[in-house]
Amino acid sequence: MRFGALSLGLAVGLSLALAQSPQDRLPQDHAPTDITGRHKRLARQTDNLAPEAGVSTVPIERANFIDDHIFGKIDRDGIPHALLSDDATFFRRLHLDLTGLVPSGADAKAFVADPDAEKRRRLIDRLVGGVEWRDRWTYWHLDMWRTSQNRVGWAGRNLFHDYVADALLLNQPYDAFIRELLTAEARSNWYVGPASYLVRWAVFADNCTEIMHEDTADEMTVMIFRHFLGVNLQCVSCHDGANHLEQVNAWLTERKREEFWAQAAFFGNTRVLRRVELRNTQDEYGIDDRDPSRDGYSRSASSTVRVARLGEGKVEPRFILGGERPESGKPLRQELARILTAHRQFARATVNRFWAEFMGAGIVDPVDGFDFRRMSAESLADGWAVQPTHPELLEELTNDFIESGYDLQHLHKRIVSSAAYQLSTAFPSRWNPDYARYFARKFMRRLSAEQVYDAVVRATNLQVPIQIPLTDRQVEHMVQMRGPADLRRSRTLDPQQKQDLQFFMEAFGQANREFNEPTRDGSIIQAALMMNSRLIRDKAKPHNGSYLAGLLSQGMDGEDLVDSLFWQFLTRAPDEREMADSKELLASRGTAAGGEDLQWLLMNKLEFMFNR
Image (cartoon, rainbow, N blue to C red; front, side, top):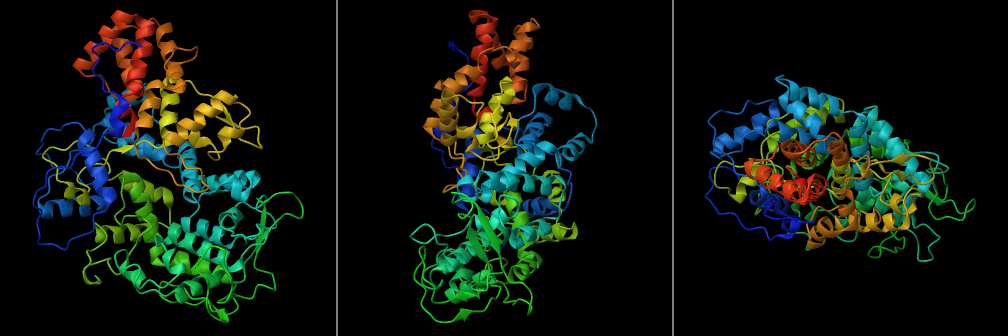
């Protein structure tokens, strides 16, 4: 491929060292808030990659209470902020955030040309709750819950995926959805969808056959608190918090291991049974609360994964947030589900987690690191800063979610409808990293591994069918799969395709759902793959049925071809320099070869790889 003088920017910037922005003095007449490493990293990354912006004196119209809090704090402290994103940027951003997929260039151009003042609202209403929205958020939930076929079986994983997808598409109240996960009983998780959430956390003895009862209760407890309450109890599952967590979490320093045991005791009667009596497998489980030998959580039970328990007798269940006990005679898991989803922290942690997904970082960040001694200036522990960047906004979002009936679609619409979400990544003045706590601009984030691949196949229109194991179903996009392991078992992929796809996805941070979580960190390997991999080089070619082949078959050339490719790959028109360089490339290489080179270059522009 020939590049000539084409100054389009290559993907080597993915591994650049992000420079520190200059420091300004911030107002000191308000309580300081915590600003995390993720806020700072995203702010630096955005400042390095975002385009320059002009200054406007036109005030931003506030769309809802989110904006009252965000811009109210900005105005109070005299902080500059970005302007609203343009229509093309918003169109691409919204599709990526809500569906995980980039839009077509033709759809984007039509949206930009639409004069309707309500077109953004109408687009939000169309995308939220749709099939592509369901696919994206089903995949996201299974990533978060690490639903691996090696833990729940292929059949269990597929069924669980479909169960979650139905709950989202039907907009089941989120609290009811989570209660089903926590209370499910099943002879086999291969036949009862929600059972796969809890059985995935079963812990085995050293002989790899016996399930450790108390260890399993501990693991379930740690995970449900991380996922649904935004609290990481991992440390206090082994020892008291005092003398261990003073630099991490003030509230956890006051927690005793005995309190954790009391929380885990809600699973004291829960039996998880591996179904090896029917099939030669380790991945099929039953779960119930009916085993008479399970009579609670023992202080003296041995452990294969935690510090040895030292004590005697049974532990009585007690909720660690507030101390509520189960009602006498009621099933313990049902009581746990009732208490957990009725607790305000459930709604608070939920809205914060989705805020982080849309905005790049949480109001409390990390999202599973809530510290209840730092939630406001009134409750602040000595020596600590207030943890939420916007405490009042977090509480109003929580109220709104509860009042909506725990409506997830309502929450998504609420966030993406705000002007705060729709701000540009460009900034009209010198950026101070501490502005990140104000959400004074939109953070620029690298696409997830699934989004990178799906963006390539959507832009080129060169999809490779991926078959879902144990089914006849085939999908075109990664976000439609049941899990990452589908790539190695798909009957529609040849060995070379499997190898190329698996390496590409792993290099871009795809989770395996077994031991790791998704990451969007950049690396030089990613840059090398985008420039030199067989997968990308092949996608750039004008194969039959590809987007480029379609344009060439219409006799498109010159400015029209360049404009169409820019809209298809970057969701924007080329600027004057890009148009001139691109036309020079087409003239020197010929339309077909030049178009192939231009597609390759567009895929290697940083903005193709980022949600801006």
